[in-house]
Picture 1 (cartoon, rainbow, N blue to C red):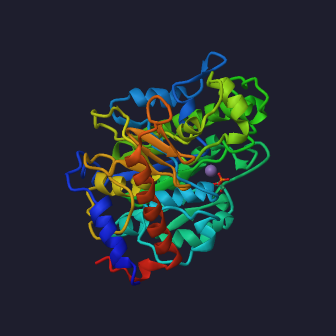
Picture 2 (picture 1 turned 90 degrees about the vertical axis):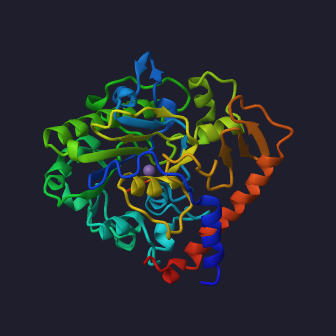
Length: 406
Ligand code: GP9
Ligand code: MN
């Protein structure tokens, strides 16, 4: 545990914010409904395919005065994909550079969001129609402090209501309602969708829009399954309203990671009407949508804050009015002004308001031009290396064992 004080000092000096959050306590004692939207990327938001909107519901949600939408929000996952995004969200720690921390370090001590919310009287639960051992979730969720996991056994799955990886998102949300309506309030309930998963299979009857037409079937199929997920979330909102849950809750929707890898850059450049996908464009394609919807709030807006999955834990705690000064974490409340002004991707890439560091080069954030004079950009990439190493040390050394959460 000898490294812990050094890391804590770094967190106090570099990460910890001072100013009051604009939204501290705004959702005190409310339920938190978190939707992890499989493979949802920002490039489809407010975009069209064959002249049709891809995500009409989510686009309308951005305009809703109860919604904060973050357009410069990045996934920070590596090989652990969905599980990495869960790890980031619950801990505000980085996932590991290789493998999935859900598999390799499930027995560690953590001081994760579900545990902290549990201490505040919240019931914490996950809904996901896959086997509980997938990604070792049956081991990891208790370590994170989740009270219960409604896995595939909680659902009725048959040939008619499943496709690709399993239960389709619409029946998934529908069947989840009977459990959700009986949970003790307040609760933190995480829903992990599945239909919009590579290779993006969808039954004809579930297709509301046509495929794209390019040399990549992956990209072509992506659009109709994204639309299906958009519709499933719309139906879920309606069910929340009909059951009276909506007014007692905040709803967060987050893309877990990219769905279209760089193997499909040729088709992607055609869709985006670009000559090529540059390293800069590649980083910008790592943006995933984040919606924070607070029913009755009335002050929501779209924001360009440079942000990432590492920021969710401090943000959710702050919305609920929970202090966590002694905690060790690497993100910031999204609603505080003096946030650290960069986001690190797991591979060491860095994004700020002014530039993007990737591929040993610095690019102008807005124009995507390579910057020749960029000392601060290169210096920051060194800070970020250290920050990633600190986070890794916590996991490799199981350092939360020595952490007194008071
Ligand atoms: C599996 C689901 C998908 O349960 O979360 O995982 P992914 O392949 O996206 O990491
Ligand atoms: Mn995923």
